[in-house]
Length: 155
Image 1: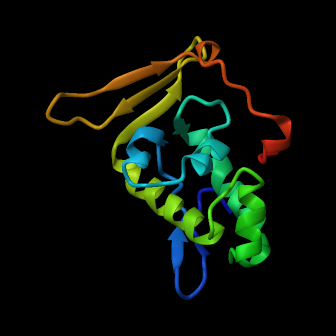
Image 2: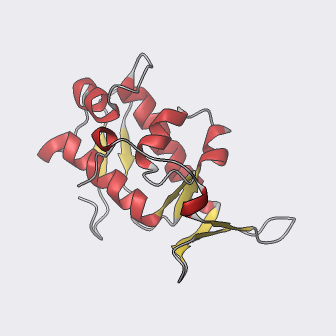
């Protein structure tokens, strides 16, 4: 589902569809929190805990959603709840997941690049604003974050 082709996932007639954005460079937690997303959903896909979904994590996110939806590209309540797992404490997994994906898609304009340097650090470059271009470098060794194997959803 997440190859070079663009597709969508259907969340039902009330919620509508979410387009798969395969050209996205990254999304960061801070900007998504401003949009009211569930931080636990973000952390589910942020496998290295650096508070940035880089292009690899985004591709794996779309793939895991495709796996959860099965061959029909429709995400029902049970599929969404199963995908989000036991850490999800909200009332409507499907609506919260769709809101999260809409926010991730809308966040694409902020990050222009999220790549690993030669030392394995994540280097995130944000779109230029009135203060210039913002670049952040994250060293995974300093993050002190471990994800339990039971929560790793990407194969």
